[in-house]
Image 1 (spheres, rainbow, N blue to C red):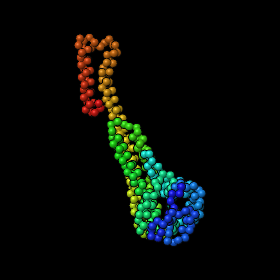
Image 2: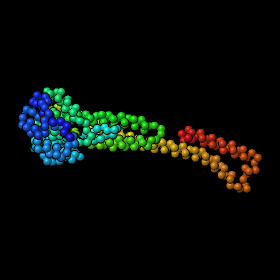
Image 3: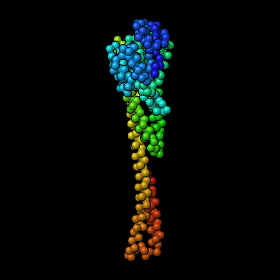
Image 4: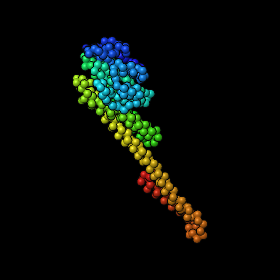
Length: 322
């Protein structure tokens, strides 16, 4: 549950790992800050960190229960941010949450559900100590940038799958699984949009306001993350429209194929109607039928029937009904 608890110095370099009981002691030094990472902690661990950092009860309650909407709030001098995360697991998109507590000299991240470890952004920060001198707000930027960048491969996966489905839509044979895959893809895309869209407002607020918590020198970096989130949001909106169009086109193609079948059936029915009508005339068994007394009446009738059928076939073929 406790992933990391590390103290960093004024020069941005890692000082040491910190025990939970020693956090309050480290916070007394103005030239140090602590970065704590948690993964699905229990209530006891969150209670301990609440005591050490002086966190608000409502924020701790949200961090423990998860299933919160994306938001940004201020509790005293602590900035509380909730973001949704996403990860591809066994070919399907799974969603999770990250809760961030940003204080004057600490950063606390709490992960729930599907989310990659923040060891990578932590390592990147430790490799650039000159930027880590900006304090915990820069560490928060690194986490936010990592979260947003993880959406990009998912969006690329959506694009590739949509491209493959577009090829199958215009095939001659109708496939029921195509419309099913289109629907499932659209449903996942809607969920993805619900996770990405609120990030724009949160990142916009972080890059413009909350001057007591966010260092001014970090704001340009946050604006860059905001641009990435906007690009991802635009891509998801565009794909949503393309998916809707693809579903409509697929249904239209099915209707066109059905119309073609109906036309062909109607053409063959019309072609067979002519000999059926002629044969029905001579099946009525009337005595006064002049053609019955003719020696060549049968052959003339057969020839006329064949000529009519050939003529109808040519006409229907040119009209593309056969």
